[in-house]
Length: 294
Image (cartoon, rainbow, N blue to C red; front, side, top):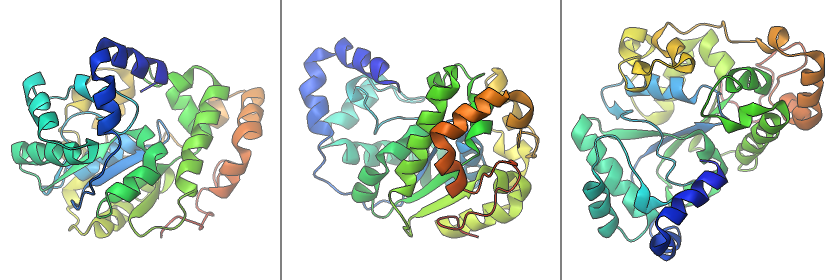
């Protein structure tokens, strides 16, 4: 959620601002085995959420929560929950961590899954906080060539960073470094969008092993992973989520970006492109081994 949007949401309930601050100074630690998916915008986080949600033990119900970003928790809404439901959960909770535990418990009770998959791309910026307060959670971070990410983002109405290549490259760089700054961690699994789309079965098996769950072959079949509210959305950016996984979105920057745009992106985030193995031919995406598990 953009900062200006967050500020507007707070101003709708000014009397709740002190309570919001208090809720976001957590004293509790969650011991639940939650699953968080995040990464820069248009890096494949939604696809991973859907694939994981096709597993019988996991629930990918609903859209993004954005709970750990700057937002008014007292104005929080979510599919399947009334304002009274949310208000009751807030009353029962000491802080945002405890609220999240109770909130996800209700979701899994409703959907039948054992673990909830929270997918909010920008939560990567709160990774340090999440690691501290959710020590038993598993975190899946998505990497994608930022130039391809921009090609996708500039056609997405809900990605404000996509309005300019300078803005997107700066934000992509920020997201990548938020992950890199945490170094090696056994609770974080890094996935490259390119590797996922090249070898979906192999990569999903690795992810499921990381999560301690059995791989289900149906997870990579579109008739199963597309059974979600998101895929019922008719907007163009969601249409591909109902189709088979393919490599058609790889390297699109080479056709869609001008030489000037490519240069701009490299000037801003060239270091991060190199660290992740996205060298200038745009094809060698598997050379980085600092943080990527194989």
